[in-house]
Length: 207
Figure 1 (tube, rainbow, N blue to C red):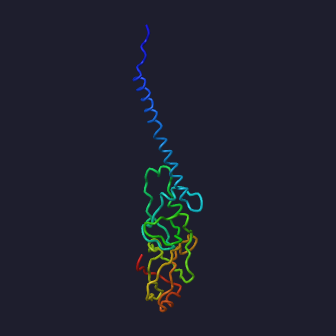
Figure 2 (figure 1 turned 180 degrees about the vertical axis):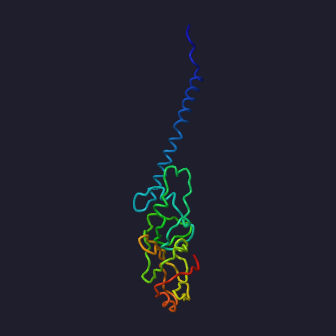
Figure 3 (figure 1 turned 135 degrees about the vertical axis):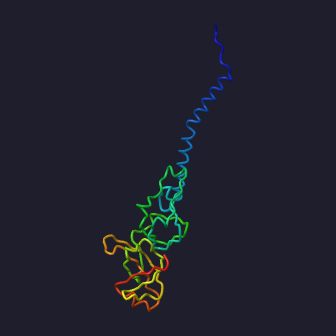
């Protein structure tokens, strides 16, 4: 006895079911791959001076405040990049290894991007600054930074009449004391006798 042929409608439905299953299986990986390629291409096209990885442009750290030149970066100074779908493909810079304790080489506005590649290992200060040792017991090196304002006092407790700006805070583990504040010596000429002393201490006015 001859078996009846399957109806055309049944064959069509079977093929459609196979197509749907195949589409569901391959569509997501294809879309993910295409998105990754597009992110990479955008990062390359927007790179300056050669090839740059996309996360350097799409996932930057940003300044939480106005950062003067020679700011010694701490966690409080930066906002960590927000995570989203693309962060699964590209990691962000390692703050502890690439940025913490390094110095800005230009002023950075609050909310602006911070490029790890532009940071310096040591501050670049002007010639007319005075390096004043910081008292580690008071933790001044953790609070003071470029832009802080202080008064300077000598061993007789005579203090400068004007406020002086900290140009940079520099720490070197091979030296004792470990940390120093580079202080702008410009200001009232009456302050010069105080600043010329060797045993100086600081009184913070504005952190």
